[in-house]
Length: 189
Image 1 (cartoon, rainbow, N blue to C red):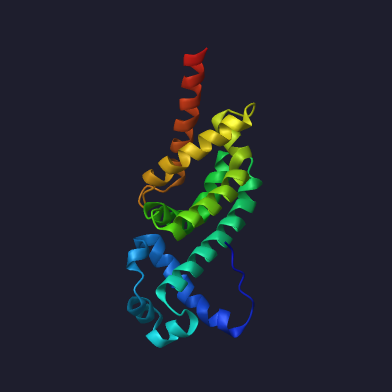
Image 2 (image 1 turned 45 degrees about the vertical axis):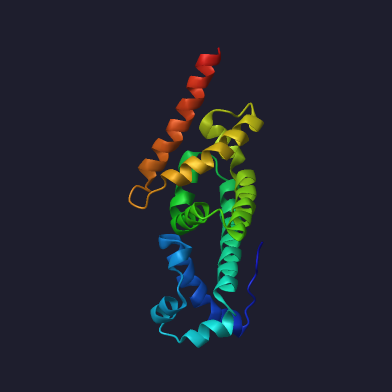
């Protein structure tokens, strides 16, 4: 995973295709990526698409590379997070990326999507582990905090909704997870 675009002209002229494709994928999923629709929204011809991407599968592959690169950049920010408020701020700042990843998860049966999910989740799990341990109150057990995070990721993306994706919803979600940890501790004491 991971493609880096140089400053060459081909990369610059391909970028608008990727930008609009990333937005559509984030909002509607991969099934909405029709070359005619992309061309129309960009005011370009379909042949321009084929100049940059030999087919739809190559285009989607480039979108996945873009998503991975964006996830790495987000992970750098998340790694420096101290608390839930900081993490919430980052997640909200990268709303489109969260919804792209949600769309990937909904279509995880496709092998290239599953591979991208795994690569992104590996990067994210490592980056978020510190702040997640603090949010959940599991600072003394980083292994358990990481396992809980991995389990909660699916729940998070299943519950992610474009209308409710707010600081309030995220804070309530994190509080719910922390309360669950407290209840488990209480029951096991």
